[in-house]
Image (cartoon, rainbow, N blue to C red; front, top):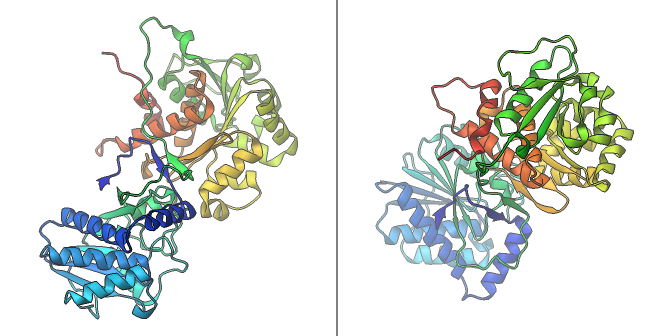
Length: 489
């Protein structure tokens, strides 16, 4: 068992894959072995999280997740820890492994409490796990609210109760995301739902124990990409070594978005950055003289990585057909995406880029993705992995579906879920910064999926490492876009 190191790559297995791995492992072991291993692992982590506890509350549910809780309670009692066990379910209807665990618990003289304890130093959530088919309700829901408002740390076994392992959607709203210290011990496999949508808030710190099971023969549903290696820059380099980026956007009243994307591309390491504003009369800020302003029509798009759409408004439509036809590599963001959603002919031009071996990365937030898919934001958020994968398939490109646990999907890669970033990024302009960073990564010669993963990782890492006493804004973030560059010795 170990705390999951999110700087390393990890395979993510959803519900069906996890069940396949579990069944194969159980078939090769004596009866009840996996559940007993799960109980030992949970007990060890519980003792580490609350080493001086006076009371550990283990709330057990009606399935095998509850059985894991029974086994953990038995192990904690053997080690002399004071525990209270509650059970929401019917003992006669427990699965075989869980029924065995309950029998062993009772044989050890440990009784089931009628009520949750008034005070506890750690709560263990063993109510609902991978096989849950219904939302928590009644006393089970009451127990969950009690856990998450009690002030003590919460340890979820395998999954936080009510969380979908595939999608990260929660069947309940527990609130207090920043007040309760949360932990999740993922068993056998690491689940994608722990890292996207509601998963990151509910799971908190993720720990992992494979229980000795072999996962190598089961394809993953997604991946955590791991921290990209900082770009190594040879001394014998020049500005042409790192590619050119052109930013086309910034319609009247929205020029700041174009400058943000360009600033981020420059600081992320592009050799040269050209700014093609769609507002001809807008003044150029004096903040960064290294940015070169050009008329959009004069740019040599065939030799550049083009970032198109940031603050583009409807004015971007005049340039979009030319950009789609000529750009060597392309990042479409914001109003560029909205234009594609409105016009089928441009959608066809976008798909044709793949046949011409022209690279395209789309960077939609959920509403923009919904427009492209002809659905609504709720449907996109209900299954972010599926939405990003469908969009990549429909438009033959790489897609970065932004949000908590941004999803990177491509036709020829297993989807990636990015684990970096926080709520600081929920402010205007940070998406423009990301688009510029993706453009810089493409200009350096990275293939699109890797370029997107790199940019998204370092974009989030910059927010994660932001000093608590320093104001945060997109303009300041743009100047931190070089966090992934190799520093001189």
